[in-house]
Length: 328
Picture (cartoon, rainbow, N blue to C red):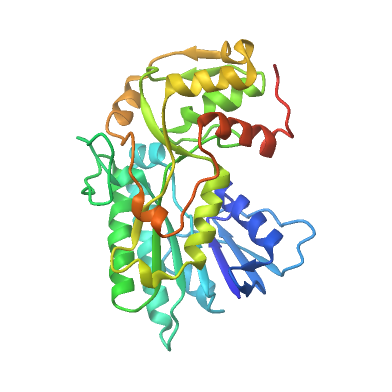
């Protein structure tokens, strides 16, 4: 099996590739080749026993997709996007990459023809939903995004469902919760502070909290995100039907509950490194975000999380990224 990973240089992309290489198979099919694509070169995996090709090009360029599809990869993981804050700050860039790039990909798949029918796993977002919200957003809640990023993801969801309906591909869109704790440096995502207030204090550094403690949000760990992708790439899609986009399981927690979990796991000294500095722009964006979900349909279709509490999310980060240690 040949697998193509778009957005392979990103955090979730890197972790997905590590998992694919470690497993050596996807479902019951052996992986024979992996192509990693991004606008910057993805890291060459060390000691890989499976051939890995690294391709660098602009995903939003209409000519980029066809060469990637020439070898006919059977499974395509589409993680390529710019993040929410950047898409909101740069309207043209957001639509060019998050929407136009995806449309070019879908058209390139259709152009291959000759029975080519790959599984396409698209990473969507809970940003496709907009306020006002019920207490929990269920599977039937309308998609009414209140950001450009959410709108771009919602349009892509519709396109993937329609191209699947027309028989051009076998698409699954997974609406990821906010992934927390993200390793590495802070990024331009408006949701980045959810990770910042855990990651930086654990490293002995100060973190800025731009919203109030009562802000609630929907979270899952990087470990869970990779599990969602793997399942979406292997599941029997006959059970999904025409509604090809699913909200992924996660857990709802307020910022205050995050901080309380951090204190339980690591102590007061770590929590003291969080500095409150309200940011009206971030607060305005967050006000339109969903808070809690009921994800019965995804769970019935076999999607599961790797954690049950926010304490688990923090412990997973300490184990996976910090070697079990942190700055007390």
